[in-house]
Length: 199
Image 1 (cartoon, one colour):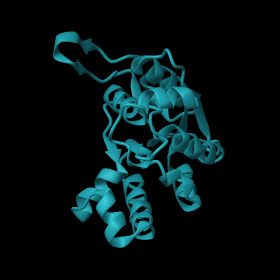
Image 2 (image 1 turned 120 degrees about the vertical axis):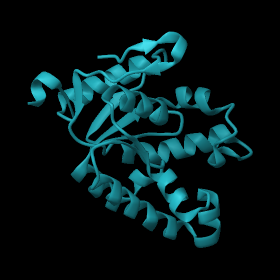
Image 3 (image 1 turned 135 degrees about the vertical axis):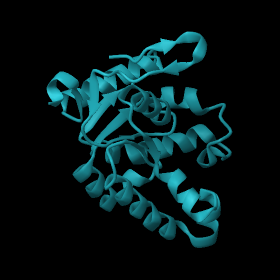
Image 4 (image 1 turned 45 degrees about the vertical axis):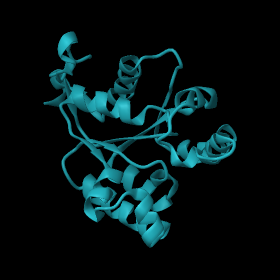
């Protein structure tokens, strides 16, 4: 299932035995591994990794923070929905959405209608261990970042639980091991096919 890793070269080549059948969307908390696992899946499947936030930034030529400041969150959320719809109408890919995208019912309907949505379900302590030393998380720039993370975690868990697919992230797993487990779920649910099954 794994692509070949040429150690000194840092390259992984696609696994020709697997084919992406529909777009895959990973959701979950900051620190759950969405970006790293998404990148690993895209590489193994020879698929493109798309990022809805990056597409919005490119189109607006402004950062997410600047968009919020100038135009407000409602404007950003409207653009986010438009971008998600456009990306889902394109070729199948691995799609990374912003942490808040899944919280909107309209987006959930669009995503579940056109993609395989998988929740990377990680425990709070694992998330905290992964994000506590990062300075790139604006939501955690508070007096008590762990309390903030806990509050976000508790608010979002019930909504993330609405995802059709779920993988419990294990603290001891590497990116490769987690990607293996995700791939098994995707194969089982028909989002990824072994090439002998694809014809």
